[in-house]
Image (cartoon, rainbow, N blue to C red; front, side, top):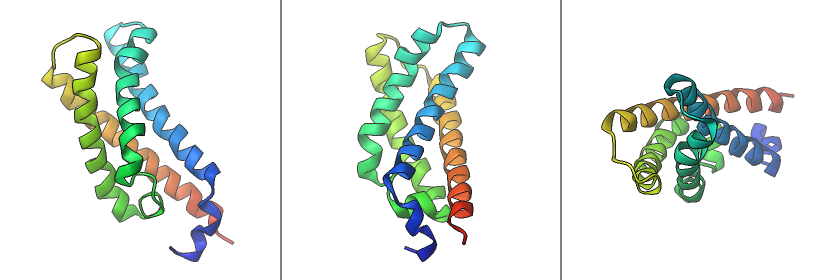
Amino acid sequence: MPQSHNKTNGPRYIVAVVLGDMSVFLAFVILGEAEHGITLVQALFGTALPFAIVWFASSPGLGAYRSSTLYNPRTTAWKIPLIWLLCGVVALFARALLTDSHFILTFAIVAIAVQGVLLVSWRGVFMMVTHWLSRP
């Protein structure tokens, strides 16, 4: 690991990434709520919760919070989408079971694509900010 990231390996940076990841799921349901006219409670429990539970239960073991993923743009560019795809598909099926609804392909595509873009974008912002903070 490069010397410049020694200051950015602390628990507060992991907490920041977790909060940022959580905000991705919240942003997705807030956008969906506005677009589809469902209540925020329905959106939080029916959509955000399954995605968040699967992501936070699985992604750390798959490497989403390793230093090599947090601070290396190339690693982030392939690893986060791959981890998200795996977690997102599991979450979609969990959501269908939890909400007692059918698997809807168009929702699945939009959910995977939008949240994937948001996760990668957020992680890119995180890398830029921590790089800026680690400069002497």
